[in-house]
Length: 130
Image 1 (cartoon, rainbow, N blue to C red):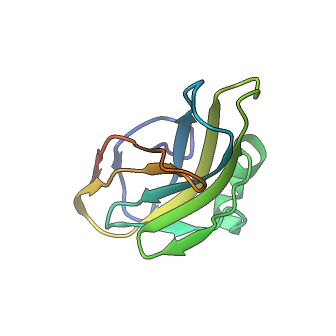
Image 2 (tube, rainbow, N blue to C red):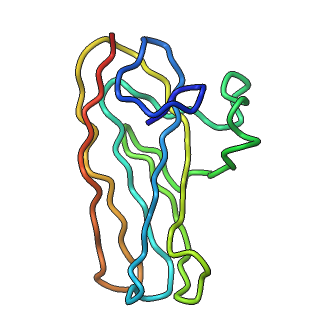
């Protein structure tokens, strides 16, 4: 999680826009194909579209990712991985806005192959809204 200035942090102010970054690292033995990336925002955060005029500050330098699905706190993306890619890392960035005060836990993000049984999880993150 990072703020408008690109500073990585886990403490935010109410109504603040934040950038959520998912760095997906593929093992060399991971099969080529389509993958679903599912991220679960903490309870106080709400996804906002990257083309929202208030978060336009990030679209030029951070790229644009359009979600496959937004359902409550879940934000999912569909990506394609090839074993001959020059970089085994895919970076997805999207934006969220803080709603309420409190301490919240961001659940595990997951990445799974849509054509097989390969799945992996990211670690949990604690977010504080002051």
